Length: 165
Length: 165
Image (cartoon, rainbow over the protein chains, first blue to last red):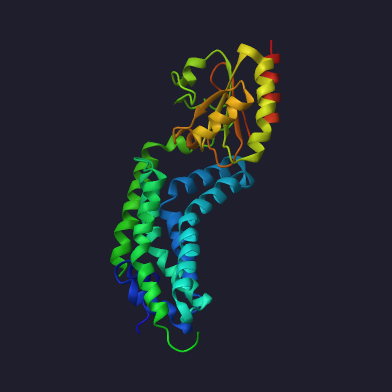
């Protein structure tokens, strides 16, 4: 299997999740999905939470770095909430559905890939919030929709693992 | 597959750039000496909205709080006592940022004197609320005199303002 770059792997999780999940499930790449997820959160901070980043930087310049800690932490928390919730839920679901093929570490890797499409949804919702604020329930419904297809694919990948269980 | 991610990233960047270009003033840190941003927030108990500009001539305390925030709940009795002591000289606005129904029930049960308002989604942002409680003291001329996470400091700041000849 060829080894695409980070943005290609993120795109693959959206349009061809089965392929991306099969790659993520390969033991040789253990841990990389987690790094991809962290990178995706950083991209979300940079391009979707730009207003908050600018605000925190302004506070750091005008009031000092200590004053900017709270807004910086709030920004990071806001960007990480959707992926962390999706990863936690998806890992439990995949682990539960994998039956005798379950493997917590690899199930968590699959869950990290499942969380990549919802990050795109959260990014758009965050960037658009300055102009039109959607209800939180609508955001979470969109996140669930974005996670559904890769989650189903992740369960299939986990159940088809050969060998150890 | 990066073509999937690129348009989303570009859209987020464009939305944020557009917002920042038109709302740069919103990002400026709210510090003592700066004019308080105007707002008109709904009363949770019903009645006409409360607009900051209508309170010109009075000292105003704006307390942002949430029902899940324990330090906020611990501060409310002190703010309530101060509100009663100050009387009509000071308008104390308790702006709830999470759960209107629970906030109303809490205020009704305790009989708190501050005016209970609901955040509109923008005001907390404009007032730089990154952690709770977040208290802003505004003088009779509409200028911010204190921004603090410690309501006791806000009460002391109001007392100093009232003590001025």
